[in-house]
Image (cartoon, rainbow, N blue to C red; front, side, top):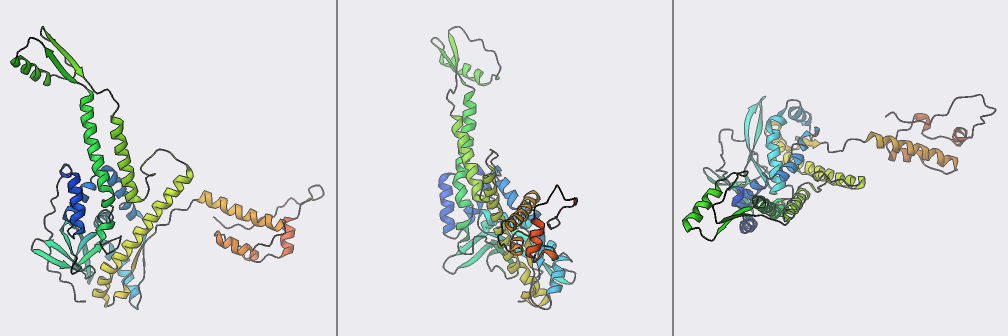
Length: 423
């Protein structure tokens, strides 16, 4: 691979997008249709307003900021220069210079929402090495040509072809490289978001009408008097006192039914659906109680989503950023390290100690009953390390440790301890 051009600066085209009130049901359908035709402009614009929703923002914070709070380590590549590459990417901080967390957060957000995130790499000299710098672009500039199966992007100097992994472009497609927009969360939540927006607008109008509408009637007033009274009522405050002219009646017509409950249920249903589409569960966003078992299931789903995201992002950045970096600086792509985020949930030490105590009790009771149990295999399964003298206990030792104690004649007050691992 040729060395990257460090002098050419490619600039994205304008990223102006319509405001949320612009979107209607027909435009949402048009965004789906044009995306299937290869143009991501409308779909990306729709994702922009979806990302501004309060529930979507909360889920994205968990998927991005929370994700980059995990411990990051690097696995060495293959080749004799792998140690140098590993030291440069970690100890000399090439990784954090090349891939700032705020840019990675945007790349992940677009990858999850639209199904595709796009970024441009600008190369600079650093510590006598060529190091890229990621800049995430708005995906509305992307176009996929189905006939040639090639990607194009719009810049200020015109449309150019892009090839992810060539050292200039990064394309994050967590759902796969074939029609990635079809597996973005936007396809599932766009109609729910539209329902939520309509419900909020109708709810606000309902609140305005709940205060009542002033209606004045008269049998003798002229048309000009009626219009003047309408203007006067429109400018009165909420706590105003009104003295009506002789022959005029004033009444207040308000909303009597509790139809606002419909709007609330629509908003709640939309919020739950969007949370499930983004993070796979809604228990962490819907604080309404629930059983411990349900909480455990939801936690497992959230952990599976996080682990899958870590795997796809690690593969993308290894192939499209670190491999070109390794080739430019060390001559071999194979020495490129792998980024690894620790997605293992924190240990529940209370539950762990109870499990270990139960295993030890089971082993002791099994020996009392004369059952043959492979103690070492059972301890290995539950992460218990046996002491050296307990690796293969003979039968006499077990019988001595489990024999009943004669409390009337015995003067020995010592007890027999079962070997336990240090916590």
